[in-house]
Image 1 (cartoon, rainbow, N blue to C red):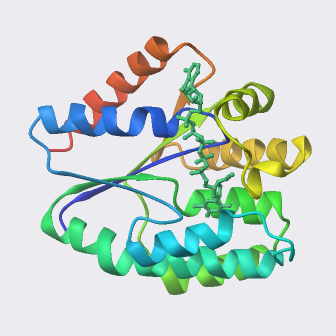
Image 2: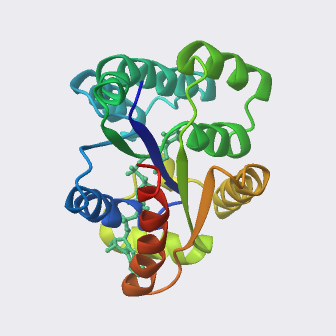
Length: 208
Ligand code: Z5A
């Protein structure tokens, strides 16, 4: 495997999607072959699982069901899109990945960390992103941005406390792995966010 795996993480409305294609364009300008994708989703089948995961429904989804669907989508995504792209030598830019599972299903839902770790081992088989850009924004600011955009999906309907646990988990993970994570102060205006991303792009381009 010769490509690079770069993930974007953060809470609701942090600005990941707004910057994903721009980041890809900046890397392509520098001559990098880039594959852009997202989780849950990224392939036809995984996008169908995403619809099931995010659609509000009358029957409440059990937390364990949610976790297993996320890993099922990820297994498909890894097998048919992420690993082949990395094998080709592409740089894969992925909107959310495993850190989101630790944050949402682990810290948010309170699922057993041993279960998450076991599934992580089975599904990821040791794959760790080369770089994770953590878009960090105060919860109320992110929710207000996301709320202005559209009807909340099933997960966006959670409580403030749920999203505070998620932010806290992401920040702790970034502190624990400073070699992998780069923190983006995503509460700033779009130009200031992009200036920070430029610095991170410059650093990543030294990998070649
Ligand atoms: N999930 C999970 O539970 N477990 C997992 O393992 C994985 C995912 C992988 C994915 O849905 C859901 O799946 C997600 C977690 C869960 N939770 N929910 N709900 P999603 O992809 O729709 O959700 P998201 O990733 O949180 O998307 P988002 O809310 O759109 O956040 P974002 O992509 O970071 O933000 P954005 O779309 O770029 O920006 C939001 C708005 O803010 C938009 O109107 C922008 O124009 C505006 N914006 C962006 N940046 C700025 C700045 N700097 N200033 C002002 N306004 C801004």
